[in-house]
Length: 232
Image (tube, rainbow, N blue to C red; front, side, top):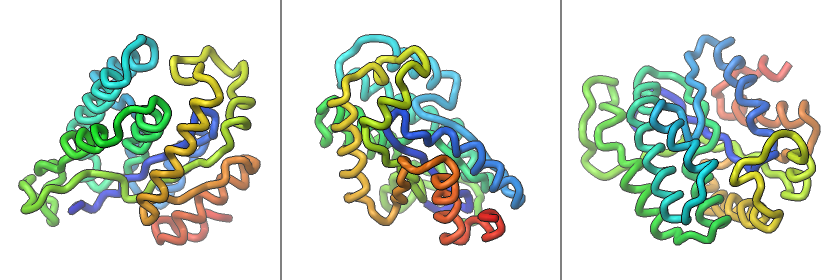
């Protein structure tokens, strides 16, 4: 990925608590003078938010669900993520493609080879990220797939996540799934980490909120993306 921006995704089963820390991390980057784009998936654009509503609320088969999610992702990449990275922003995204492999692949049992094909089609750079100097976009010599520089995985036992979600709000089509579904999703995330160990940072989300937050910050300090003062 030839740009000066930073693309961070946040993953975990519903109830893992990842969303709690995204805004705080955005503030930490802003405090060090970085421009930050906060976004989410499915969603992030007007079209993608409409598709999000369909995915969360309307009954459909796994293929239709996957196609809608990847359609939303393409619009999100073209209109929000790629332009932000070209500007040099830190992009903090609540879920990205790992969620699709965890929820639709592992959770729904949908064909992961099809998901991999969709990932390659939808996330192909196709000149979206421009040349190394940040000038006009160019088509790369070899096919590249846009993916996060780092994925923070909030790992929480599904049983604990279910307790956190109980009575919190009206459950959508995913949150209302049985425990066994989330056990498969959790395993799906573990499989993704195993396949992409250089990109994943696992956070023990069963800890108290402050310990989780310190764990998140430590990852960024160790990578040199935030100053050590952020931990104080």
